[in-house]
Amino acid sequence: MINIPKNISVESKLEIDRLIVVVANFDDRPNADFTNLYIFDTNGDLIWRVPENKERYIFDEPDPFTAVRSDENGQIIVNTWAGLRYILDVQGRRLILIQDGRRPW
Image (cartoon, rainbow, N blue to C red; front, side, top):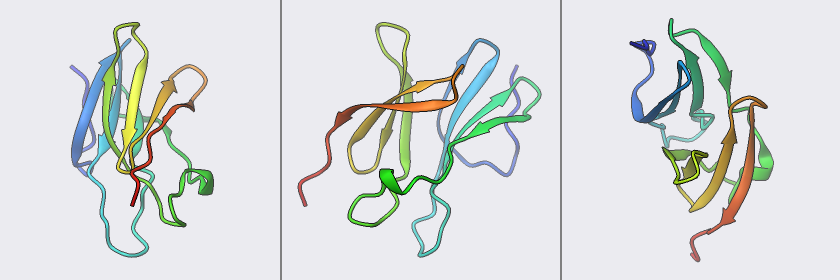
């Protein structure tokens, strides 16, 4: 069993290769932290957290992650609130944009 730290409120999670990818609930108040994508090991120790990246901002606002899943090819897919979709490269600890599905508002 993989332990997630109790201070992380889980929105979505995916267990893979003795790791767990977690999308935490995000706080939408001004100045809130939108780096809500994590990888933990089986002990609940933080392996990686998505860094702050202004390139992922939509209309100069942070774009939090909303879900994680595995696709039919075994790739880890993460979605954002604005409709962007990324592959999460767990080994390389990076995101690869695969769909720019920004909502048209």
